[in-house]
Image 1 (cartoon, rainbow, N blue to C red):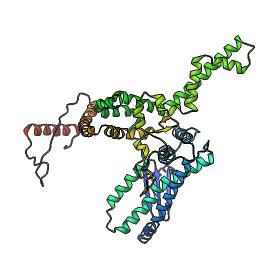
Image 2 (image 1 turned 90 degrees about the vertical axis):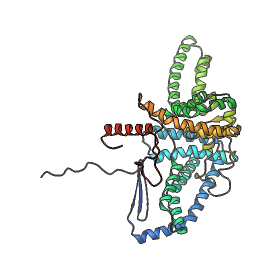
Image 3 (image 1 turned 180 degrees about the vertical axis):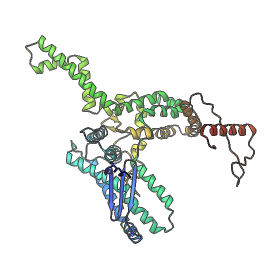
Image 4 (image 1 turned 90 degrees about the horizontal axis):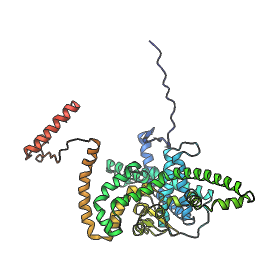
Length: 450
């Protein structure tokens, strides 16, 4: 009998790891693993300690949120968000040669969307001119700690506390609550970016008339303009770098040419003469503005969206009054974030977009609120048109995936209360025939009953 071949699979380091006493938690990509080495007595004791610690954990999270808000109020918001976006871009693209894990990407993303939400909710104080490295590191550590505690420690202590309040707590419902809150805190992006334009156009097209009436822009044009924002925040950086390289080559060539024609001029004079060329001067401003300034994020500069709509989609610093309103979860990410209600931020008279996920995840609901606020009578029409398009789109998408398919709709399976679907009651012959044909076809294709 031959020797058994040893497995070549070595130790795989988890992306995230947390241990407390006999409990271990590890995450490998999208897979989370929990392991307990505890006895029943240890589990009961741990649950009791977590329930006892719950008020302390809540107080500490409140203090952490207050600290984050106080720090952000003293930072220049434009520089803060500019740095946050560039760090997020570096993490996603792997700049520096180190591949970032999912937790690093999540932490970098929270420095964009949560920080912008705090900026929109907290009145700015006297601001420093710069965001120093030590100040940035402290703020980033606090934001990362906040989301980590809300995802793990807070959830465990809250469940333990709820069980002491209600020994008959429905644990399936509790698990649903925990999963929902963790997704709310951490997950962004409903679609691949390449699908955003078509998906948004499909659901906004029925409301084109009211968009024209209120803002002078139809649905197709609106989606095209939003797609420009998407392009700037995804491909814009690569295009700007390519533009910088081409600009450098053209400028050096022109400088060499002028140096031969005007040997009497020094370098500074030659440089000034190079930029007498209006095209080169415009390219310099464009490259500088996108790579070192704020032009990459300037919605008005990059799109033709009407000013009235931009105003409806933008917060000024401290304008939102709900996120930090007194009450439970004041400033906590478990509330609805301001960036989810208005994706843009207005700074020094310019309107910026730093986060495409909040924009495209929420823009449909945001536009509904804006339109119904301006045209209250349209609320019912919006709902009716939404129902129609939501019924039609599945068949439209299926038709694209299966061109030439024959689609039967609607097919109803009716039965009396207390009886199974095999006992169809009141179903007309045509519907029953279609149902039977569909079942037989499915059986022929897959070799089993439908």
